[in-house]
Amino acid sequence: MQPGSQCRPTFEEPCACWIIAGGAHHTPFSQLGSTERGKDFSAIADIERATVDAKTIARHLQQTLSNKEVYHATNTGWGIYSD
Image 1 (cartoon, rainbow, N blue to C red):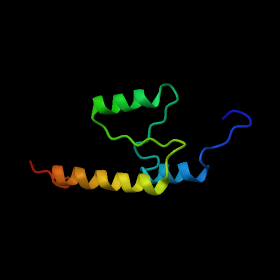
Image 2: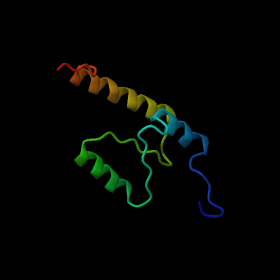
Image 3: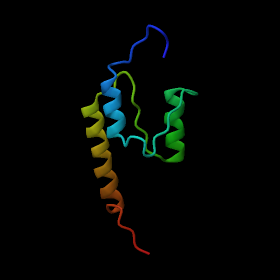
Image 4: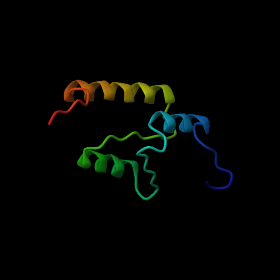
C-alpha cells in the first residue's frame, strides 16, 4: 500500500468479504491485470468469481453467493453424482 493511502471502504469490510467468499480456500489474488480481464478469464474458464473492491458490502456479497449456490444446486442436483 502506498504511504498515506487508506483501505477502502474499511479494513474490516474486505476482510469479512474474503472470509465469506471462502477465505484462503480457493482464493487467488492478483495485481497483474484489470478486473475486466479477470472477469473475462472466469467466464472463459467457467469458474465462479467474487470481486472484493472498494464498493463491496459484506452482506450483499453473502446474499449473492447464497443465491448463486441455490441456483447452481437446483440446476445440477445439489452436487449428488452417480457413477
